[in-house]
Length: 248
Image (cartoon, rainbow, N blue to C red; front, side, top):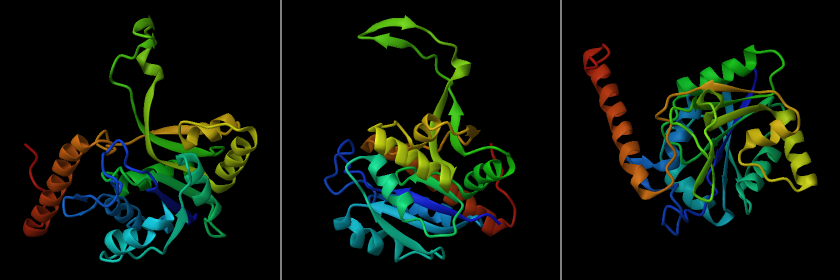
């Protein structure tokens, strides 16, 4: 089996969330926010190592609150976050252990990712010749406008657009080369895939569940918590009855 290392990006300051200590350790449905993502990758048979990116001063807090209390079998190491997310993911990619062929980069603030979605995206990358990476996401469902100031300039065809999520999964060689080129040329991308695309890499979008939400502001916690609690209730129902619960 091809070896995949997961990267959990947890280096944000939480400025938009409004919590000076960041949002990664905020309790969501009984666990720290970032723990849900770590557990999803831990359960993937493809993933053999996890790198958590965080500020050095937060490393001990994150380990003791979000990792140590939980039954996690995959080895975990840390990388120090940088000034930007791009700096942080580059630092994480640099410390991926030798022997890994792929890296799956995921926002620690997307706690709803499932192991099934992770495995499906990895499978697409492994099974498609010539690919350098895949990006989980969703085709756009809203009408999009190109706007200057407040004035609409154009309404492009919606079918051309996807909303990009994470994980974004790449061959280790492609993502390392892309980061090196971006650093040398002073380029800052909007996500990791944009670096690989700019370097000439071939990246495919893979449809993932629409509820793979990112927690950015406090009001995002309400739907995320509701979904997690619903999943937990469904899991308990399966254990109690030995069959899947009826839906509707």
